[in-house]
Every structure is written in C-alpha cells, then in structure tokens.
Image 1 (tube, rainbow, N blue to C red):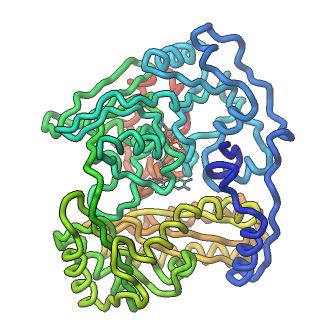
Image 2 (cartoon, helix red, strand yellow):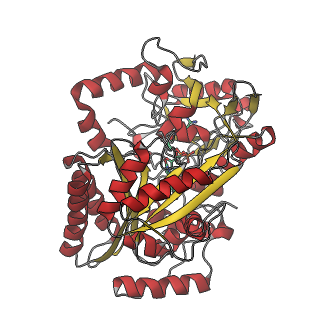
Length: 522
Ligand SMILES: Cc1cc2nc3c(=O)[nH]c(=O)nc-3n(C[C@H](O)[C@H](O)[C@H](O)COP(=O)(O)OP(=O)(O)OC[C@H]3O[C@@H](n4cnc5c(N)ncnc54)[C@H](O)[C@@H]3O)c2cc1C
C-alpha cells in the first residue's frame, strides 16, 4: 500500500531496529541523538469536506473522494510536503481524484474543470520534489482536482525494426520496463524514483536517469508526443529526426502540467544489455577525479556510467571514506571488458587506483553496495524527517571550469545558514551526470535545525543554495524540474522575452489558467 505521508510503500519503511542504528549514526555525525516520531495515521487526519458535488455520470465513474486517495494526491515528496503530511496537515487537500483511461476522458475532465472553474493538477507518480504537485490553497480555487494518469497505461505498439514503443504516459517505471522486457527492449531510463514515477511525469519534468553519461535526459528518447490541453489535442508525428522548425516535442517536455496532460509518447527503446563490467576507482582528491572524469567522457570509450562520489558521499553509502568513481560499461552484443581495461588505464594516469578487494566481473561489489543504498535512500530520508531533522538534496549543472567556485560557494552558503541557526549539518556531494563540457553536482544535506523550526530552516537553505548555484554559473535545476520552489529563479534565468514567450504558449493551451497554477511561471 502506498504511503500517503512518505516514500513508496508502507512496507518499505524502516523498522525500529534500522531506525535505532540510523539514530546512532546520526549522533556521531551531528552530535545529537534524534528520537523518532511516527506520522499521524490517516484515520486521525482532519480533512475538509470535498467541495465536489455530483459529477456527470461518465466522470463520476472515474472519480474518488475517499481520504486515502485525496491524501496521497495532495502532496509531492519534497521535504516541506513530507513534514506537513507527517503532521497530518491536509487543510488544502485536493477535492477529488479523477482517473481517466484515454484521451476522450482526459478531455472530458478538462471540459468539466473549465465549466466549474476547477484547478487541475496532473499526477503521475507524485514524486515531485519541487512543489509541482501541491498543495493549492483552497481559498484560491473553487475546486482542486487531481488528474491521476495511472490508467493511461497501455502499450499500444512496439516496433522491433525501428526500436520504438508507443507507451501510455501513466506507466510507472517497473510496469513500463516490464512491458518492454518480453520484446528484449529497455527504455534505459532509471531515475532514483523509478518505482513510483511515470513516463508522463518524466517528460513533463525533463527527468534525468541514473546513467551519468550519454543519453540520459528523457526528452532525448522522445520520438512523438500526445498532449490533451484545454485548447484541444496536439499529436506530434513520431520521426527519427526532423529539421522542420522548432521542435514541438521539446516544447512540451518540461511543461510540468501547465500546458495540459501528456497522454502518450512514442519512445526510442534499446536492446537490453547482455554484457556488463564495472569497477570502483579511488582518487586522492575530487579535483583529480573530475579531471579523469572529463577525459573519460570525451574519450569516445562511451562508458555506460561514471559516477564520482566525494568522501562524505562514499561514507554515507557504506563504501569507506575515499573520493571514488564508479565506472561501468555495457553492451547488448559485444563484451566490454577490454573497454573497461582501457578506461582503467586512463583513470590510473590521473591518479585513480582500482580498489583493493574489488573482484572484476559483471558488477563490482562497490557498485552493488552503491545501488542498494541508492534505492533505500528515500526510505531513510523519511525516517530522518521523522527524527525532526532536515534532509534535502540540491542539484545543478555547471562547466568543469566553473565547478570549483560553485562548489565552494554552495558549501559556504550551507555553512552560513547553519551557523546563523546554531545548526549542525552533514554535506555530501556526488556527480550525477557528466558531459564533455561540464557536470551535474548533487548535494545532500542532513542537519539538525538548531534553534530554527525545520520548515523555515529548509526555506533558508533552499534560497541560499539556489542563489549560490545561479550566481556561480549553475543551472536552476539539472533534472528535478522547476515546480513552485524554483519558479522565481527560473523566471529570472529565462529573462523577459523567455518569460513572455512561455506565458503566451501557456495562455494558448490553457486560456483560463486551470492547469497546475503557480507551477513554472507566476
Ligand atoms: C526519492 C526521489 C528520487 C528522485 N530521483 C530522481 C532522479 O533520479 N532523476 C530525476 O530526474 N528526478 C528524480 N526525482 C524527482 C521526480 O521523481 C521526477 O521529477 C519525476 O520525473 C516525476 O515523475 P512523476 O510521475 O512522479 O511526476 P509527478 O510528481 O506526478 O508530477 C511532476 C510534475 O509533472 C506534472 N505531470 C505529471 N504527469 C504529467 C503528465 N502526464 N502530463 C503533464 N504533466 C504531468 C505534474 O503536474 C507535476 O507538475 C526524485 C524524487 C524523489 C522523491
């Protein structure tokens, strides 16, 4: 059963013994031994009555107003949303959830919303961490409807010759991969939120998968898209490539529910890998590791992955205190050991040292440890929030030349906020994606908020880090999206003309301003 106040499923949450170990580790890192408080159970939550009256029969059939459905759809999975959900604060809960199963039903929901002046929030997996889901203040809207895309889950066509698949936007990661597996294909897009996020959500937020190099942003896999908007349906022609005018697919990617609902996508898929090899390489410093990373990415060896972890991130992932790179190769049809060997020579020329105790083979021990800690991390974050601590991740992208200044400014900004509040924190960094011209650093902060209240401490941290990113040549976000939290920085970054152009597009698709108000643009 999905957890209405936390990550994933209730069964995945940490048990008492795991929480005890975590609390002891946090005491070592932060100097306080935090105690855990369980979230307010659903049965004790006071929720305002749904304001939605009787719907037309066709819509009544696909509507839910029960407390669990409303609670699950009222928040994304960002720190402030989880704090409020755990505290049982559902005063702005959505009025109802609608589950359309095709384009006609999506259009019917949007028509009804226009007549009722209802705000509509498209909901894929609800894993937004930027305030892309909610909550919308009740007093601003006559009605707030969540449009869950979960029933837009058909696999209409798999073309083995062209290696494309026409997929429903509501497919969550495991169902999507499950439907491609019998054909020998994979989409090869694995965000950390894979289990509980959807194809439509990925496209709407331009998500990044966990492969750090090569094709990694979801829009690079899109061949054609269907959008149902209040203004009508837009279906783009799936083509391998086109030079005809601005790309409509790119225009819809990143629209975060503000243009309408992405209902279907034709995606470029790939043969499943049959050969794999990976290795963990230690480096004397972040600087040497990043020098090696840049050269490896530009080498045309085409590693499937090369992820750099700083000392703190390595320690947090149970790998020991060392800067290290996890490097991996894979292929559907040729062995990759020779490529890995060449890559290891290149890394060793930069001071990289193959880790002792690492067995060569399909998958290195460190890669396995990293993977399990990566998948369990969101459940750990829930427990940390339950202990009254602040846990947040901050991500951006920056050129190789710009990274040292950005890194320094980011760490200084975090330290400044902590000092002002008498807080104690722990910062770690990993490079989630690497390009020929730069990289995407990803910071995790765990802190006891000192004298501050956790939500205001979080807001100060968010503001300080976003400012440090933007002032030091970084992107507002590399893959988490804009939502409400990054809106003002995004608006500034696109400038007057960019804002006006995006606003005009939005008014075209959604003249009454019903779709996800407050997200992306003010
Ligand atoms: C633990 C955790 C790990 C994460 N890891 C990653 C990661 O590795 N990489 C990454 O990129 N992101 C990551 N995220 C962020 C999040 O998972 C992504 O933004 C993801 O793409 C959201 O997909 P979703 O289906 O959950 O969308 P939702 O959260 O449901 O929605 C996100 C936004 O898109 C809109 N939307 C959703 N579906 C549609 C649709 N069909 N049509 C139009 N608009 C739509 C929503 O209205 C909302 O504004 C992570 C989040 C968490 C909590």
